[in-house]
Image (tube, rainbow, N blue to C red; front, side):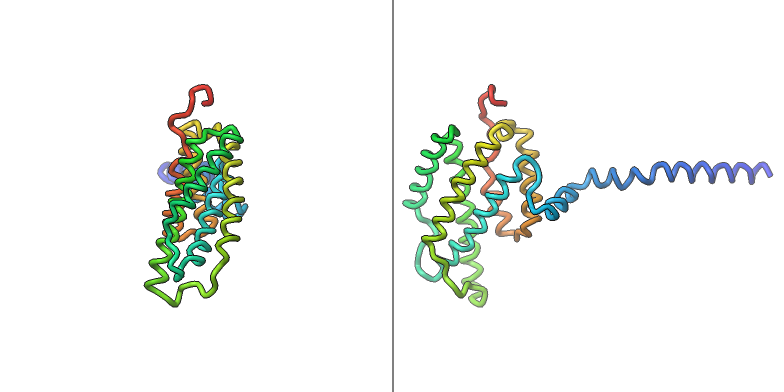
Length: 215
């Protein structure tokens, strides 16, 4: 009888302990799983965190690179266009000064955007050359694409201004950028090529040389 009583008490205590601890386990797992943030981004249609809006525009610009590649492919137009690139960067410098942004930092950021675009173009050129059946059958107007890119330049500068404070905090910026890029890549279902481009495009987002007064 004593043994049976002890077993019964042990079973009751174990059951109470299990009931008390079980609800906490899924919460702990969810808190430790980065993909929970990614899932929320997919549902809301925006990248997560304080750098989410900036990352969304970066991804939009990367997507436009697909059209740039389609406009150039098969025409002999080179992917590298140093003259056009310098024109874009000079305009960025002027707009950055007008917006009271660090012009050198803005130019570095946009140089990364140009690099990211070339990553996409080179990747697509290689894919379409190896698999002609996947090549675009229509050719977008490059002039209209450049107008769109000019608008995105304005949008990106605005987001650089909006996120200036967090970007000047290296640790916080790194965390926020990781959250934004991971959720944005998942939301847009970016393939490896476009993920590489996103990585290239965000190299200069966080500033390690920010003035102490702005941190």
